[in-house]
Image 1 (cartoon, rainbow, N blue to C red):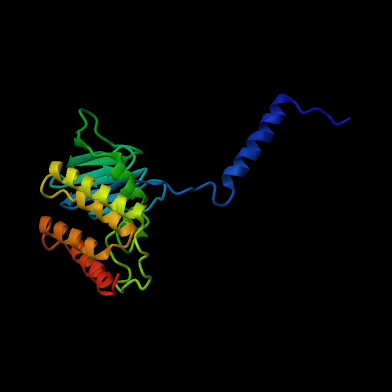
Image 2 (cartoon, rainbow, N blue to C red):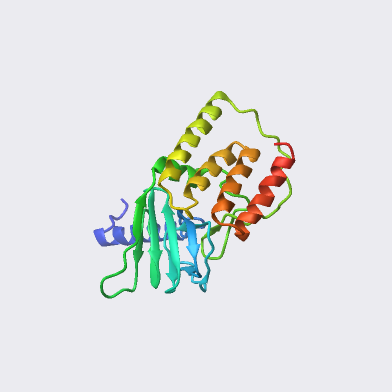
Length: 244
């Protein structure tokens, strides 16, 4: 007859098995998910992630933010974050340090009366599309602290893969997206690129490069000379010139 294990012994064994499970490769350090997009940044700001224990790095506009990222805004900086899951668009003014959650940011380190953002709500049908598009913007790559730099083309050469003919369903989705884009544009302030970023992501999903070029031109009319947008314009034009 096998000896029976006491309750405490069983607990110790279960705990050891659980700790071994957490320590297994690929299980202990699951990367946090993308939760938001920096749609506007005026001034300089830095970001870091406590889990990665790396030094703060400079933020850029059009970067994706992961859950748990810390964002530090000096006094002369303003930042707009768009949360994918909630459609919450927050505009913060420094000085403030933020921590990104799943659906909204929280000011950290403020002892009394923490600052509050200006908030608008964007339809989640649009924001989730921006998160899940297979090609939001060219050259996406994970940077040091879990923020995705979405507007730096890694290879500006044309994509030689021909775009497939659009199906009736694709045409319907693009038409629907165009309507949502017009509605978003009615409520957007002059420098807000959220409507264009949304429509661009839908067009990119179907490799509609000539139409994407028009959207980039609209973004540049809102932010003339923006270097990230200029790089994006060069990349999109190369795709359109390739005959897509």
